Image (tube, rainbow, N blue to C red):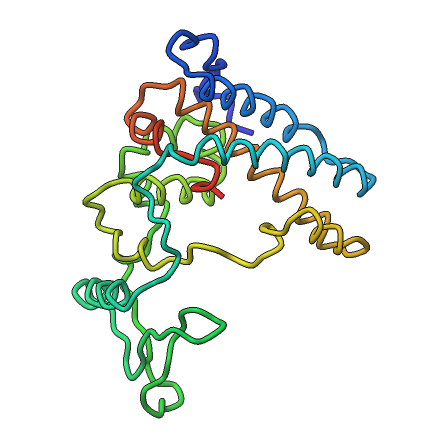
Length: 253
């Protein structure tokens, strides 16, 4: 996955390094992460029923992982609702940093959560929304942060910019004084895509090409979580020090 001239991190199981410091729950978590990494690395089965069985095993592991991690990040908000104060703070942040919403506003629409509402008749070809590059979270931002060394050397981050952005977003979320805090607070807390379907709901997709694509993506994200969990638990770089006690399956998912 990475280039030959890159220095790849060697991931050793936490239990061989910090066994005496782990509680029973922590030890179980590390063992489950090891198992998840092994299972999610297996090639996708050509028979869809076997892929579903593999997914059931992954689900059983990740459900237990989420229970073990429930208190790991106690500072995370449990409120899924975006309040008017959060919207106002986001709009203030946008305008103070050069963004423009001409004749429209952010509103909550019943059944659809947040959206853009036109407050006036908008003329054809007129400028409605302008967002400066400063407000766009990008790979360049990640490369200028403490994530820089990992982006350059890690075999996944150096080749998958979408994963780099996901890790960078979490890093900024866990910082108390992040420039991006108003943006992060307004992001959706839950989604309704097939990636969040239960096993029973996935079963309903049999016969659709969407099922295989969903199973592949779920397995890929599960594998990424296990990889980064082990990386952050066994490394002493600045990123791992921030993420070690905050990174969870639920946060990454």
